[in-house]
Length: 291
DNA sequence: ACGAGCGCCTGTCGGC
DNA sequence: TGCCGACAGGCGCTCG
Image (cartoon, rainbow, N blue to C red; front, side, top):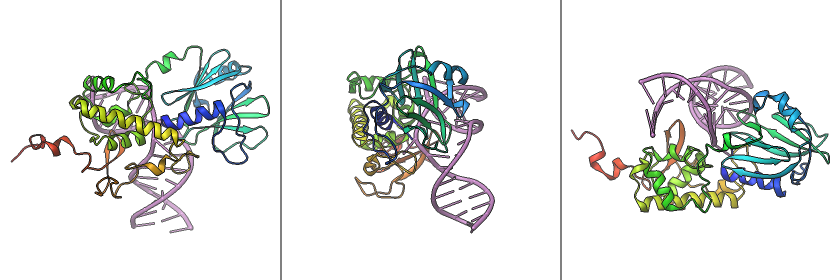
């Protein structure tokens, strides 16, 4: 489910309230509340420490703030930090006490004021850490793409320093933090770059287009509260702005050619082969043996 | 350094 | 209708 815009939307709602939610869910922030106790319903959800230790240590801590780094939700607690990675299907829900648990609740934090913070995750890929120092987990992440220090020149230098296909490189969280399959495809389309283009071949102008495209899709995704597809994530609106993702066979909004679906690095990848020509297409000398 | 393959899980959808 | 495979917003691991 969640990429940077969805995680940002969730973190803001937990911090400030205001996330669109079903009527029976309270629209209140969790910042300022106290964690009275914790229930671990699927042991592997808690990556660190052991579940029993997690329950004991988290109880009694106050929630001082909620932020985001890459695709992690970062809770600043009174004694340490709690990190949540939602992976494919995770979600964080504020609920009233005494309401029934969802079928996929994996971790429930009981808060003061008759509230709960529930981690719901059908596919059980999501993970939660309770750490004194979050650096061992967050330190491996690349730069925040929306930070002022992430400039077109910085991106160009980063691209030239690697020899990787653009799509897998954009999905590599150690390269840049927060892009996932949807926003990577949308960014490459808007930059008119083929997903298999070797990163070290990009011109300054191409890197500049990619930078603008990444910033645009992420900012627009946040502005529209994320992308809601299927049952997983709710309240977002960016799905109506998608140009290529999950649109195989439909006309390219730019040129009308049918959108193609290929597989790159085991991920479904959507592109317009006319608007995003590969090197082989633009340079006949690279098209293979000319027999 | 890079890419491919697989595992982790559950749910949905399309084809037969 | 039921079954079966393909697929899904992510990422860590091993292996060449």
